[in-house]
Length: 160
Ligand SMILES: CC(C)(COP(=O)(O)OP(=O)(O)OC[C@H]1O[C@@H](n2cnc3c(N)ncnc32)[C@H](O)[C@@H]1OP(=O)(O)O)[C@@H](O)C(=O)NCCC(=O)NCCS
Image (cartoon, rainbow, N blue to C red; front, top):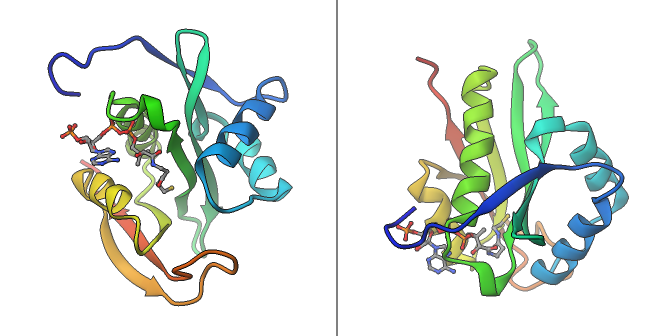
């Protein structure tokens, strides 16, 4: 986080108690409507899903799914990472993403990836700062938004 942007942000785990806050956040931030499966996966991901609080206000969240691959490796998939517009640029997105990247290091997860709409340059630049690269472009990935295309952004994590 840059100098002068130090704000007090706390991260809280997802539970049945605050699940509605994550749903409300996602409705406010994303043009896509997510189904119950996303929230079930988020609850099952444990520490890989966190809400960010600015004082008492829930202003952002990262929601991940852990995917077991053939051979036993586990990959992390970022289903949503969002911060309410008035609270952007304060380092909250960085804090949420670094939390999950730290968990990946600690749990020897070698790959973390996500889908992002091809016109979402802010998000693409944000993820590139953390070492994510575009590894694939999928046409007509989204059904109800334009453009319907997405990039897959992947970070390969080299264990020390
Ligand atoms: C992407 C997103 C989560 C970043 O959250 P944030 O809290 O604003 O990010 P940070 O304050 O930690 O910023 C990190 C860096 O990215 C840059 N950045 C973040 N958002 C930016 C924006 N909207 N425009 C330009 N740069 C941006 C910042 O300049 C910062 O760089 P710096 O540390 O060198 O100054 C937020 O913009 C967002 O919620 N976007 C809408 C939802 C979305 O598209 N999510 C991604 C797809 S899952």
